[in-house]
Structures are given as structure tokens and as C-alpha cells.
Length: 132
Image 1 (spheres, rainbow, N blue to C red):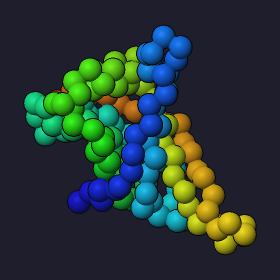
Image 2 (cartoon, one colour):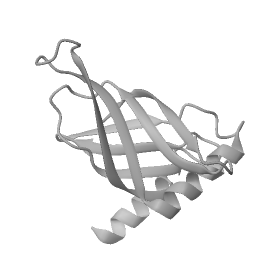
Image 3 (tube, one colour):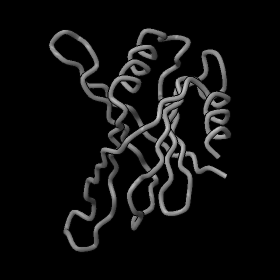
Image 4 (cartoon, rainbow, N blue to C red):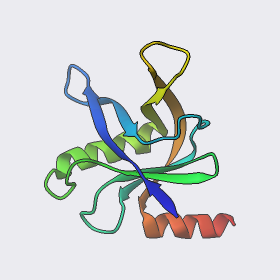
């Protein structure tokens, strides 16, 4: 069973207005967790016009985050992210974690990790079945 996290997606654009970077700011990751692994990006999580999402494994748990915009209402932005992940194949995940060793208590943690692009859940399952 997956753990659905709260978060937001930050899209940085270059001077031409093209997507230059995408940051997934997450809330709810374990304080002492390891690094994210086996990240996937689904262009449509449940089918046509459903939210884009990422999922990854961390410390024997699967975490899922849905994009915080309506892909059907903003298809241009959804297409831009699709192209970004198809082209670059890496994802930037960021979060705040408690750190008992510093006065502020929170420390920002970031990971850049490979991400596998799939059009939708069915495509991902079929691809994984061929591998296994």
C-alpha cells in the first residue's frame, strides 16, 4: 500500500518561458528516512485527464505525490512537464526534516534521482511485467 504525501510542485522557467527545472516540495517524509529510489513519473495517474504524479520507494515504503494542478484544466502545463521528464529523466525532490542538532529544528533536504517516465499506470504495469 502506498503512502500519499502532501506537497506542491515548483516550476522554474528560463528566459524563454520554457521549463528549466521542476521541484517537488514534500511534506510528511520520515524524519530519519534514507534516499528515494525507483522513482516513476506518470503523465496520467488514473487515465485520461487525471493528475500527473510521482512515486518512489524510501525505507521499504512506497510514497506517492499527485501534482497540485488539474491536468484537464491546464493541459499546456501538463504537456510541458511530460516533455521535461521524457527529455531529462531526473527528478528533484525536496523536503524539510527535523534535526535535533540545530536550533531551528528543520533542515532542508534535497535529492536528484533518476525517474522513469510512463504515460499512465497501465503502461507502467505492462512494462514492469515484461521485465519481471
